[in-house]
Image (cartoon, rainbow, N blue to C red; front, side, top):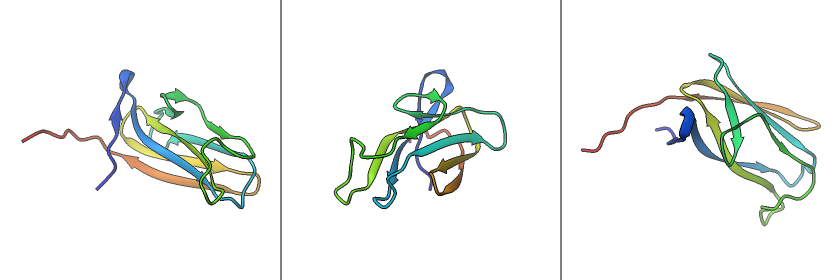
Length: 108
């Protein structure tokens, strides 16, 4: 079973997202997104803003007790498809691939 998306104005769909950075990494983090099977937009933040997410080095407002840095917000897409997020730090780069499917849920 997948995660539920929230519908926004202008055709955006969102899922709450919490980026957690291990206490062992104190540098900056850049998060970018793209649709792999089309040209749909990806946005980040508290509203559907196209672009990327930058978490600067050093402490964040929402630190966890273990020293992990966090960046709460949302990931926004314009519709169904296959998407990738690329997370880049000073010494690493990771790619996360995910699929968005839209279905209508009806009440019985």
